[in-house]
Picture 1 (cartoon, rainbow, N blue to C red):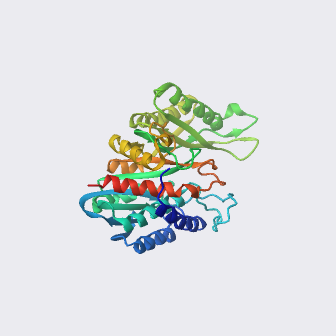
Picture 2 (spheres, one colour):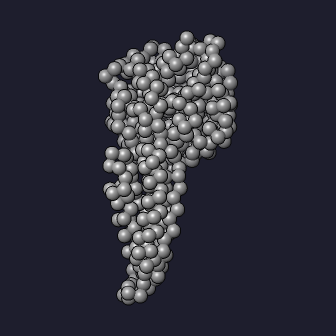
Picture 3 (tube, one colour):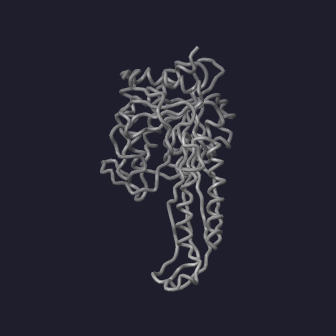
Length: 386
């Protein structure tokens, strides 16, 4: 791995920023402390422009190099998760029930380190735009920043993102062209039957039984309606009905999530979840109302930018430590909204043998900060060269 001495020194400082952010986690758009810290540091670095409040609480810094007409965006996320931390680290969360369980503290620290390095060296032509986004965890902060004019205001022509990945060797990189992460949607199904005494089931239209049949039937969407070569997931994650041992309730509720790697499969899931739920209930003498809500679209890497990012990653980590044909993941990422607005690519950096993302024992691996800073620096200097 090729890491300069100056970045190794900078990484030590970035580690302190990371751990400070880790101690003070904030959720979704309520990231005022983190955003304030980021904006203050960007000003200290000498960024030519620092704008707060993009997409409610997002922060954008503009670093101008030599004269040039191009601008690229580099994005990190800032928000934490509503999880009680169990990592046992000395710098653990000081806020009960909130923690950085997805590594956004590390993403922010790495991009801050790159911003400082780029502001010091300015070895590029045009504008390097660093984007610090709120509300990745379910709040659609990427969409909010795009809708707030992020791309147009800063004349961003291409946009890039990075996320840590437990299980991938520290500082290694992985990505693929096309879909790299799935769309993420949710559904709610309300079932209405007829309640009765549990000892007289023939007098009821049992919504619990109907719910069970709907759950089973929903699984046929993936197994029998979706092309098996295209990724699809339908997961029912909750069922709620009744309170008593001896009463068949009159209503039941199901909810869950759907994931897809193509817009066509996403459309199929939306149509079939509603049809299967409502018609299964009808066939059993009950009624059901299914509501399907779209959240994050497919995160789709653009071909040219994916090849470029692979080349940059190899400059940092070496040819054998970069996988440019990794399998897509069924998790979702709202960087997808930015990739719908501009060409770009999303890449994973290995976090090593850590607990998984969204796990109470997770911690970002500070040892990968130098590689992350190097990647962002190399990306800006290479894409904005000449």
